[in-house]
Length: 91
Image 1: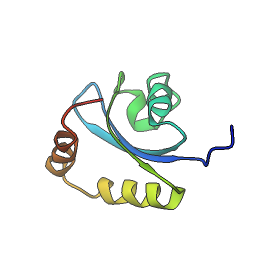
Image 2 (image 1 turned 30 degrees about the vertical axis):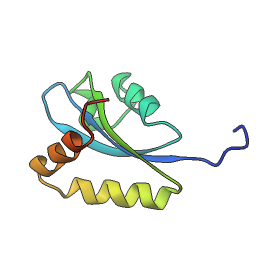
Image 3 (image 1 turned 90 degrees about the horizontal axis):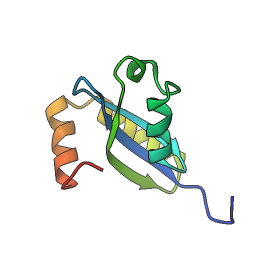
C-alpha cells in the first residue's frame, strides 16, 4: 500500500429481500459490497442481490473488526436496524 496502515471494517449490507448481512473486510467496505454484488461475496448474498452498504465501522486491526462482526451476527434484526438508524442514513 502507500505507507498507510491497513484499515479493517465491520459492515452491514441490506439485501434485496430486506435482510441484513454482516461481514468484515480489509481496506474498503464499499469494495467488499461491490464484490457481493458481483457474486463474489458470501453464499448468503448471492441469491439476494443487489445489496446496498448500509453501515460500516472502521478499525485499526482485524481482531476488532471480526469481534464486532461476531457480536452483530448474534443480535436480533431489530437491534441491527437500530444500529443502521443510529448512523442517520443508509450509505
